Image (cartoon, rainbow over all chains, first blue to last red; front, side):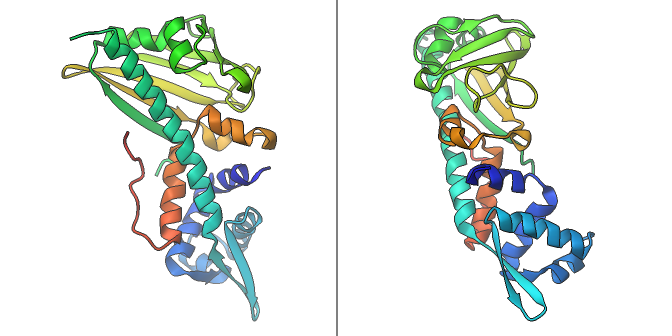
Length: 107
Length: 158
């Protein structure tokens, strides 16, 4: 899986998006703390964080007995740029459709 | 928050039938969605519309719904040149047309990104082939959080 693809697949899960939102808002957090805020087990949180870590969306650092996770914005920014380009292509196509339709329809 | 769709729209100063013909006539489709040569179009549900994207390949899209002059939809396997679109390899592109004051409101929705797998070697050209904005919404929103900026609007309008 390539970088953008991996990010999209990771983001496809609503729980992972929720975890990212919370990590972004809190700066840093641990699986235990995140599990306390959400209706899912710590083990599930650990698994979701591992997926996010694997595609570079978060990084974890061991502190004592826990890992502290934070968001890595580079990967998100890269994905956002890719998607902006794709969206811009629809805008160009719609603009061309508009130009053709209006040229054929003098008013 | 819907993470699975691009939504764009444009107001066109032309009657709805005119816009419909630009969306569906081979010569027009070849212009706005191809390299200039007329597209091959079998305009019926289950029919195939072949988009020629030059060096990126040709894309046999599968027409899902044809309801002139209000709705047209097809599946587009933009990461797989030469491969007929199926539910697994493609996104769904839906055009809807609505009469508006002095013209037509044309809306396009492309959805199905979360189940789409883009092969690594096609990443850059799948980028060319056009995708995602629902995704853009999610990623931008998250990126904005990540950078400490305010929440950005989910769906920027053209």
